[in-house]
Length: 129
Ligand SMILES: [Cu+2]
View 1 (tube, rainbow, N blue to C red):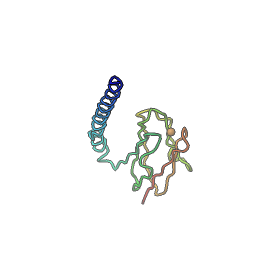
View 2: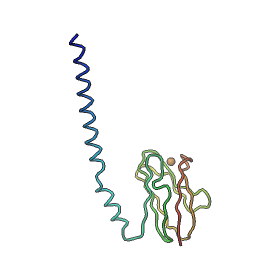
View 3: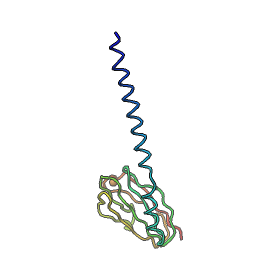
View 4: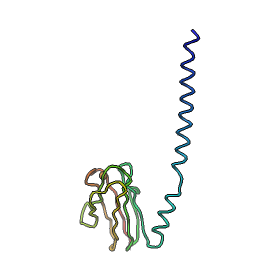
């Protein structure tokens, strides 16, 4: 009878150790060093950034002022595009992982765009004069 308890106890120990290990790596992943570098990079030139990650544009709505350059960076392994829903302001090619696309918005307006590969991926840049 006693033997039956041992495997259960072992399973619990493994579960606790496993959870602790995950927590540790999650904390490390939150290091903000990378973000600070990218902000410094675009600091001088009124740049804004959109990240494509988890099959989504982030942020979904980006307000900018006229003459702002916006850069999209694909952080997914999946390929994505940045494509205007109406008009032709945004026409990227297929972006691989770490691929970037950028454009400067010279006219005020609301620029809806999506991804040709995943048409449900939609977002908008709102340019104010
Ligand atoms: Cu996509």
